[in-house]
Amino acid sequence: MRNPIRTVFIELPCTVLFALAAINVVHAQGHADQRVLAAARECEPKERSLIERLVGIDSGTGDVAGLTAVGTLLRTELEAIGAKVESVGAVAPALGDNLVATLTGTGKGRILLIAHIDTVFPHGTVAQHPYAVLGNHGVGPGAGDDKSGAATAVCALSILQQLQWTDYAQIKLLLNSNEETGSVGSRDLIRSLAKQSDVAINLERGVPPDGVLISRKGSAILTIEIRGRAAHSGLEPEKGRNAAIEAAHQALQLGQLANAEKGTTVNVTVLEGGGTINVIPAHATVKADVRAYSKEEFDRVEEGLHRLSNETIVPGIDVSATLARNFPPWPHAASTDALVERARKLYSEIDGSLATVSVGSSADVAFAAESGVPSIDGFGLLGGGAHSLDDYADLASIVPRLYLLTRMVMDIGEHPPAH
Image (tube, rainbow, N blue to C red; front, side, top):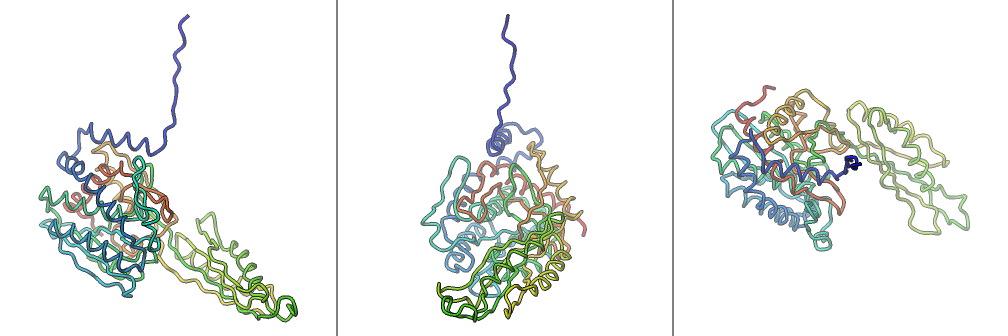
């Protein structure tokens, strides 16, 4: 008797699946724009090198020397392809300069590309954790968030220059120096550039296995300051008003302000009080990160915060509470869906298939969308590990993602959406 035929299913990681898809991009494309695809392949080594050079420079928000070095490197690359590059000072000099690169064409569409060159990592991180290529992952501080986004923009614009393709009215690339702390020094610049554009494309990393972003939560910083009274913790503790105890109480009750059904989160991230073991603490601070998909939810959280902060457990304590709004929400919009459909059609030229994702993190796309311009996000390389030492860019996604961005710019340049 012959052995029965058995079928074996092997589950592969997403990165392996994407690498296999990238191989298909290289070898079997019937409807691709072959000029763009060939140029994307040709640009891959350059983009790998550029990511490595960018990640090799410490450029945490406020590291002016590092941000200047990154800006100088990118300015050189952009001016080499004919872009006019302007330094635009942030609101505070300590935030470094933003760069705005402009290409002027002969067509209709006005396109705004956005990437940021600052990271969350302090100076010295690069020396302790240098860039490394592990399989298909380029790992290093800011590799995926968002230096690979800046590198992808440079390579896409290089492809247009190489192909002598100018069927657009204008392309502007904003390289933001202070996104990681809320774009305080660039949000007005983003809004202004968006108003001059037909589409805004944010080059934050794409979400594995192969997704773009269609909405983001806004962010806010919740702060509670508690003032009590110091006293000797052994001799006469009853004369004190323990601010640390009140801080613990306030932190615990903040969970009531979250709303899982609406995706609103309130996470305590800082809890400070006291400093000397034998002194009843007279001051304490609680900070929480708040994320929500709508302005109305932030309003609700703020109202609830003021109510809860008055519900103290330590007699004679003084509590003040504030909610400082940072990035606005970027709600899901029909204009984004229309851009997704364009992107899917273009990506299908190389057999790509885009997923759509909504995420809890915030980004510059929200400031662009406030102006009413159709906006989309997640057009950088795939990646993960943001804000950790495992931050990575998926190098296997360079060719397909570079093809997608270049074709999207070409399509919008020829046929800008009405808005």
